[in-house]
Amino acid sequence: MLQIIKSDGEEEGMESSMETEISVTIEEPKKKKQRKFNNTWLQDPLFKEWLKISPNGDKPFCSICVRDLSCSRYVLVEHVQTQKHIDNYKCLYDRLPIAPVDTSRSMSKIKLNMRLETVRMELSAFFTEHNLPIAIVDDLIPLLNRLYYDSKLSDKFVKPRKESTKVIVKSLGTEKNSKLSKILRESKFSVLIDESIPITGKKLPCVLVKFMTPDRKILKQCFELSELYGRNYSASILFAAFKTVFEKQNIPLSNIVSLTSNNALVMFEKRDSFVNRLKELTPNLVVFNCISGLSALIASKACAQIPVFCCQFLNSVSLYLSCTPKKIDSLHDFQKQFGIEVQKIFKAVTLKWLPLHKCIVGLLKNWIPLICFFRSESLGTKSLAAIDIYNSFYNDEIHAYLLFLQFTLEIFIDFNDLFHSEEIQIHKLAERSRWILKQIAICFLKPNALEKITVDSITSENILPLLTINVGSECQKFLDNCKLEIVSKN
Image (cartoon, rainbow, N blue to C red):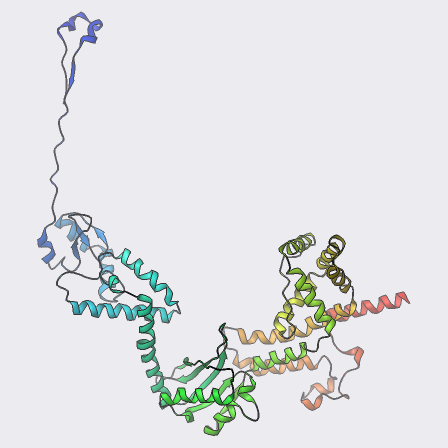
C-alpha cells in the first residue's frame, strides 16, 4: 500500500514541493500453502506400483514415465489415466524391456537377482541377434544408469563386457548348439565349409549347415568356427578337426548328404583330400564345387598369360601416381579440363583379375588426360620414369592388349555378378554357365563347332583364322585404324 504524506506548506504551491516528505510502505504478499507429500499414497493400490518420492524434493515421482508430479491426489489420479502412462505401464510389465525397476524395500534380494539375470540375457541376446560389438556394453550400462537413476540394476553390472561375453558363449551359445545338434542327429543336412584367414594369419575353418526344421523350414546356420594351429595345413588335419566337431555332439557323419566348398587343393586334390576322406565314411556324398571360384580361377589363369611389358606398364602408372598427393591433384586438374569424372587409378594386381579389370577400365577412360599429365611430368621434372611411361602410351601393342583385356574380362564380370545378388539365382545358374561358355567360344570357334561345345571341340580345325577372331569392337576398331595408318605411311 502506497501512502503519501505532505507537509504543512502544501498551500504554498508547487514551489515548496521539495520540502514534501514521502513515505512508501509495501504490504507483503500472502504466502501460498505448499502441499506436502502424503506417505499414505505409497500404500494406495492405485499408486503403489509406480509412485515414489522424487530425489529432487518432497514431490511425487512416477518411475514409469520418469517425471515429477504435483503434490495432489487429483493430479495423481489424472496422471494414471493418461495414455502415455498406460503405454509405459504395458511396456514395462508386458514386454519387460530394460526400464526403471521397482526398488522399493519390499523387493527381496532374490527378485532383484532374477531381474538382473533377465536383463543380462536380454542384453546379450540383443547384441548377438543384431551382430553388435560387445565393446559397446561398457558405454551402454553407464548410459542406462544416467537415464534410469532410480534403478539399481545398472549398478550391479561390475564388468558388463566380460559378463555379456560369458552369457553369449556359455549360456546362449550352448543352448543354441544343443538345439541345433538335436536336429542334426535326427535329420539329413548339407555342409558348407570354407576357411577364413584373418589379420593374425590363423586358419579359421567355418562350418555351415543347411537343414530342414521340424516345422519344414529350410535354415542355414553356423555350426562351428574352429581354429587350427601350426604351419602344416593338410587334408588330414582339416578332416580331423571337422570330424571332432561332430563327434562331440554325437552327430553321425552319415547324415551329411552334400558338401559345398571352395576349390582349394586341400579340399579337392585327387590323391589325398578332405573330400576323399569324407567319402570313405559317406559313399553317397554329393559334392559341389564353387562355380564362382572356378570362373575366378579361369580368369586368373588367363591374366597370368599377359605379356610382361603390359604388366610393367600398368604397375609403373599406378606406382608413379601413388608416390605423392601432389601428382594425384595434378592428374585431377587434367581430368577436369577434359570433362572426365575425377576418379582414382586403381593399383594393378596381375594375378587378381577383378583389381586388374578396374585398373584397365580406369586407364582407358583417362587415356588422354594421362598422356597430358605424363607429358607435363616429363617436361617439368624430367623424370626418366615419367618419360618411359609417356612413350609407352604411344605403344599401339599395349593399347590393343588393354582394349582386348577389357572386352574379355567384362564377360567374367557379368557372370560374377550373378553370385553377389541378394535374390535367389540358383535357377539361372545352368543357363548362365552355358552362356559364358558360348560367349568365350564364339570369339574363336567356327559356327559348326558351337552347336555342342566340349573340350574336344577346341581343335585347330575348328578355330577361326587369326584375322577373324573376335577381340571386341573397340579393340577391332583400334586395330583397323592402325592398319590404315600403316597403309598410308607405305
